[in-house]
Each structure stands twice: as C-alpha cells, then as structure tokens.
View 1: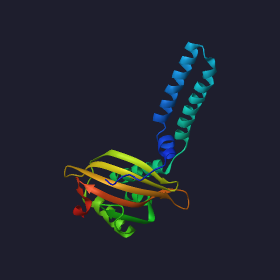
View 2: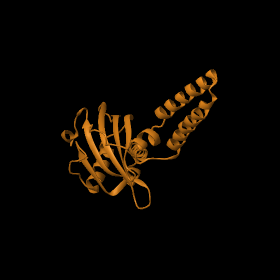
View 3: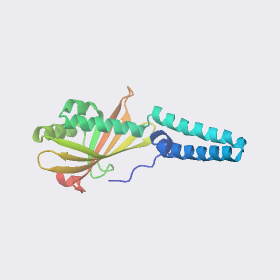
View 4: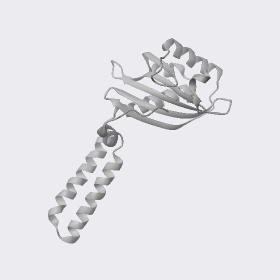
Length: 197
C-alpha cells in the first residue's frame, strides 16, 4: 500500500479524529479543576472550564463537519457495497465520467471509463461474490475538494478468500455529489495487482 498523503493537523486530529485530543484536554481540565478545589485555588477553575469547553468544541466540530477524507470513506464503502451486491449501475453511478483505473500505483497511467465498465461487468458476470469483509478503510483529506481512501478487503468469490488493496480518489462533481475519480488496484494476495490482469 502506498504511503498515505500528507493531511493537515486540523483535518486529521480535530475534524476526522477529535477523540484523542478532546480526551487529553478533558483529563487536563479535570486535573486542574480537582487540584483547584482541593488546594482552594479557585482562580484556576476558569482554566479548567475553558479546557472543558475546548474539548467539547473539538468533539462537536468533528461530528458536524465532514472532511473530504470522510467523504472518500463513505463513497468507497458505497462502491464496495454496490459491487458486492452485484449492482453495476449503482457502482457506475458513483464514478466520475472521466474516472480512470490503474494497477499497482496511483501514479501509473490509467484506463478510461470504457475499460472500467467492461471490467466491472466482466467481474460481476464471471464471479459470484459470496462474502466480503473490509479489513481497512482509512480516509485522507488531500484538500477540501479531494479525498483519498485506502481500502483492503478479503473477498470470497468462489475460489477461496482473496485479499485486495486499493487506493480510491474522490472529488465532488458540479452538483456537489462526491464521486470516484480514480481507482487503483494496488495488490492482490500480497502481489502487485498487474500480475492478475
């Protein structure tokens, strides 16, 4: 799997994953508040209240604001569900008109939508997916209008479990709907995906 893209501190630690920072602030607030009360130094209580408010604000912001990384996770999950459910129309509807498909690395040249549609229909016609487990789905906010998801699945399509790893890039279209712009199959059974073309 390629290295994840660099993401901003606020996007990653406040908007996407506020819990560690919020918990740390809350624990510090409790310690300051408790020691202020025990030692009779009530002038420290406003600091404890401010830290509690900051902790709460972090959690609320994280719950209310969807980043492009979180959007990439949601769209990727919908795409996987459509493919596993054998709904090629729903899967294709999640793809941008100029979407591309690459093997091994997102930097490799990609195939166009015609290829993607052919391969998707071929897979759905030739294989019966009896089970699929997402073992990893991490979203990254590349920018406010571009997200990237790193996906790993174990899929049973009649020949035993197959492990595959993917990079899925998304962006919003003109209507504001997030869609997949690039699919990259990185690995299949811990080998470069291009060996399975």
